[in-house]
Amino acid sequence: MRFLFFMRLKINGESAKNLKAATIRALLEELKIDSGRVAVEVNLSIIKKVDYDHYTLNDGDSVEIVNFVGGG
Image (cartoon, rainbow, N blue to C red; front, side, top):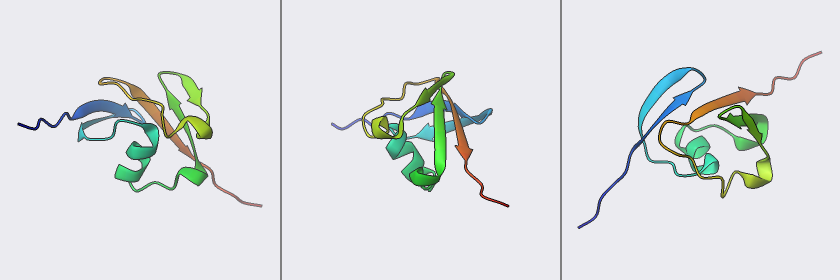
């Protein structure tokens, strides 16, 4: 028997349910966000891009995803 675990996260202040992502990289892919153009904070701690593949998210985490915007 196989069980699926869905997480509840708060993303940019909004509740998000039924997410399957276990890592930051997987979350960004699930949300269809280009990881090269964002900064991610989990529970008020900024996560380095090199850690996205193995930083494990937990049920109830608060995630902030900030998109870089260029201009002049």
